[in-house]
Picture 1: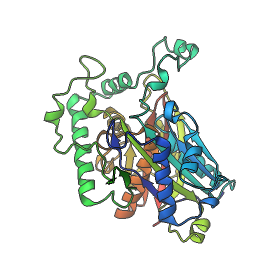
Picture 2: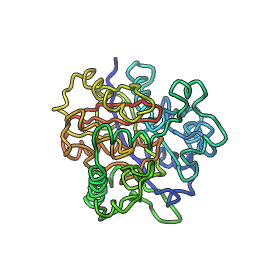
Picture 3: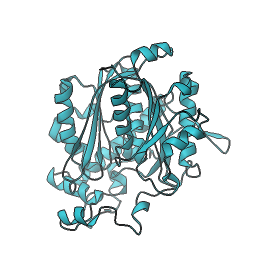
Length: 381
């Protein structure tokens, strides 16, 4: 099998719901990142075998193969294909897996794995309105109850004995780490500036400086009256896009590129669809077995902060070092543009690995329906 490397990684800053990026069509937003990819790498886009774009809410402005139309909007040759995939929140992490599989198998030499979501223009539950998205048989199998992520997050908090203070402490830390990352310039190289009315949008819009357990304690529970989950310890609804250039070492050298990381292994697992958000735990276990790399050798973990209870339960089960978890903040502070989040997290992680000389990084993401992707990469740059 061919060795697979990530030769470039970049993202937009994440916009808040109805914020700076709200008026940009998701196809155009994705096209901005594809254009930046060519500008920064100097590759000939005609040599890209495929563009695989994650997008979770394929409805309205995101309904007609965002991947293909983003290629056209970017001005790439119309001979370059594009596809759009949906694995809920893990859509673009799955795009990376598909790109890696194609290159590994020799079916492609250069693939762009990307993701985009405009949650301002296409709200998370828009596709459900007037429809029956789960189907009667799937619902009947689980007692007719609709699958609800917020309720699942509450069940996780109960099962792992996580208090409101535990969750709020993680949330405050997420904001503090994200703010520190911005102040240190950690995101500058990876962020693609987006021109909005003559100004460059470059800083993630959801960071709340000075967030604390005390300020978060004032917020009302969102999913049950006596619950512990609320808007402040849940991921933010966001807009954003991101892209990775996935190729072989030989092709990267030929293009004059120094790869950032080697794709070591990836897995996807299914788990209880009602509890839903615990699948990163077995996904991590499978990934470690598959790769042969022990937890103790991994220097950074990106576990998506869909809700604060998710990474905290993951920490309990894996025994990972909490200081290595989401060191630049997570979705609670930086936002969660569903289809873009997998590649956006990978972008943050591989740049952090390079900046700090970290050999191995592990990323995992809970997903609606009770699935999770987990990916292990190794520093090369």
